[in-house]
Image 1: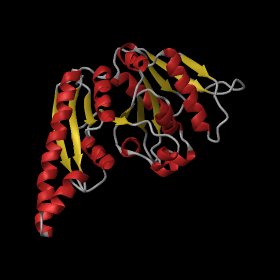
Image 2: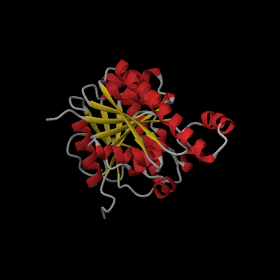
Image 3: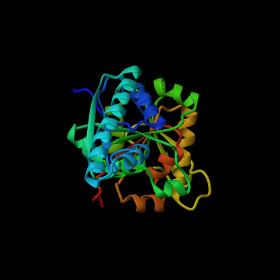
Length: 284
């Protein structure tokens, strides 16, 4: 059996650094690529402002932005590699120049290196900011591989749970939930897996392939997805889970956010690393 293959997105932010640190604890023996996606405008605003002052012609400005942007991409990726080595991984750098958005580019790279999982950081957006989306949202929706989203910041107790905590898998009896469970067992080998189903006390939960927790839906929310996410988040806290795993049918970002799907609600409210396992988008 081959080692788990990890593509970790890094953009120089604190949330991306924290995701690398958490990923190294959760997937310590993985083969790892630290990826920086170099997308338009190909250099940060401070660099572009200085170049606009210096360069007199448009062609010279474009060439300078390309040159300085490439150097910046190299520096950022090298920093990510150093952080990953300190965390315990033996990573390889991967720089991608793309005209698409960063989230889509990460998904393409995941297929290129045949990654088993993509690791990205999230600033824990909620409310209006969550509706507007983020790079981690786009990766979770569109990457063709499972995506581990690590919220930033984690509390010290939540960080401590990464080393020894169980894996909590949301279960609803669907093919997507079964795939999520199988993926969790493959990625987090040797960790205890707790299967949790959310339902009211009036009906029996869908049969799970192992023992499960029966969680009452919590809160009076407009969308059922948020209620399920709250129940999973509470169970993860009580069980000191290292990761929460949910399946997703892979609808469009706008539809899933607005409908408050379990996957999206869990991403924004679990306050633990969340593994989203995207099932076939054409599943009936």
